[in-house]
Image (cartoon, rainbow, N blue to C red):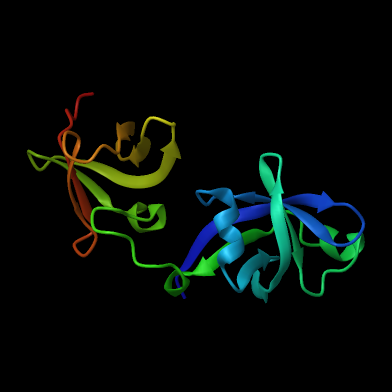
Length: 165
């Protein structure tokens, strides 16, 4: 099963089973639209239905069905939140889910392999590929001038990047 990480449980909120959720979606409240959400706790995935949720400061607070007290909620703190890949809508042409880019090989225009995408960072101006190979490189994910080609089906990203940089 292909899981796409969407955030994690950061803590409890109150005494009625509400949880503080650190969302990895943009906007953060988009996480609430997925039904069910899956939590990975102690190495096991379990499906949870969102009973209620709202923005609370820089995070969300969420109430899962069946999670009605602070003790039950506390057992979920630290759990990863994910959805099945099939729950996500298809991206628009030229747009990509971060999860689809992770693990792709990164190759220069001159066919020099720089490594693979280990993770992505959000900087505000543009996203950044963290490429790990013989060393780590931070490459802006700017389509056109830097990222010239993304071939998900062939497992690579082509970049206009100096391998010595």
